[in-house]
Image (cartoon, rainbow, N blue to C red; front, top):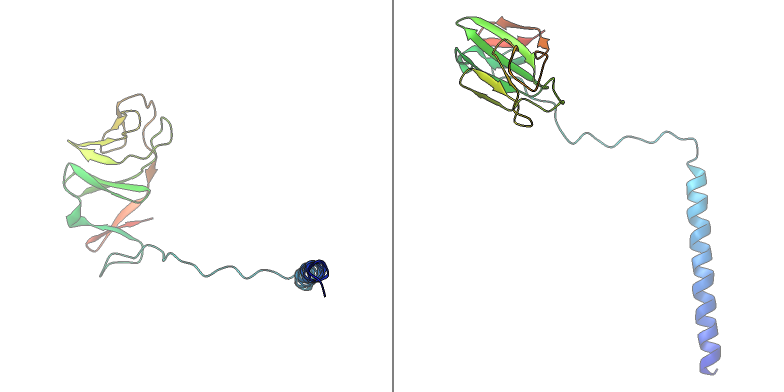
Length: 146
């Protein structure tokens, strides 16, 4: 055989192989039509409860200073006066950013400078509405949601 015949056979083989591969792919896709896909396994575990506390614990009471607070996910837990705990949504009412700092008795949204009191009231705008409250209660030595 000469080179041109060999080249033609090689091209034909490649084209035929590609056609077979395409047909096999189509058949495989059709064979699973209508079946429900199995979701991939979860890769992130849900937040762990406080060690030694209830399953819905947000923080230990000892970790929340009087006149301060802690940010736990989407919840801010404050202690404006000794033994009084307040739950607040961490979403700023101005533009939806998150409150990310608690300093000098105020919750701060660093996006636009709004500040809120430990009870969620507006201290400094541009926010005009207080932070939404979230129910929290003391259970043993923990603050729990709900």
